[in-house]
Image (cartoon, rainbow, N blue to C red):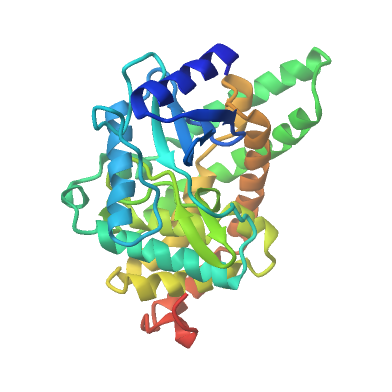
Length: 357
């Protein structure tokens, strides 16, 4: 953001939150909000600046969900209130929320203890949210997720390939264009698998309020201890298997850890110990749900050619990694099914006797 916008944020922190700002630095993270760290006289805080058009009511509910998790003993961040007791300040054109600064650092290549921690805390989150009123509501989003329009998806791929072809004809194609053309062509050939994979999912998959974006980039570790869970999404019910599968088969893990299936085993065993009432069919489906989410998404490459994100280089890399993950998971689908079936034949009896994470 421009310096004047930064000055406006500092003024809001002073006028609306009573914070004496010494330094305000934009952080190179996040795609949906512009994020800052402020060093103040008595503390450091994290600031989310919401772009125009953001559903601020939904974001307020997301703040409340994070604080609900915190009340259940989960290391989730809490938001500071402004002078009117609000968790989001929208009194100016710069809407923002201010959060306590949480300890720890992001770890993209987890070790065994960190996988255990990750699964254990997600299990606690799901157990805490299972009885929320919103968890008993039907999920229109889940129905839309099942109803994938493969023809429309293929058309979007073709549009992106046409843009790349035109760049090549104009003599301006770069290294990413070459990789994007290759991966999009490969993805196009995979899309016919989507309907059969969706059809093989049980209809009765659990729907409830989730974290919604539970992944290594939103977790902070201090050593092996999970010290912060960040960026809860608004409490819209969705597939429980999505939250679990997304983190158990995260692209960084699938593409970077040669033992990625054992990593998933470790995480899911810890998850089941913390939330033992989750039905077996949700566990068995989480790998396919994760695969379908990746397979039907053009996130990253679509932004590159149609509407660049805040940190598009990161999105470019993420697209390539996600595509590699799809290829690996497609080739090892039967082994993943066997792994998850094996896990559901064993009782969630305390992390396979490995001790609480």
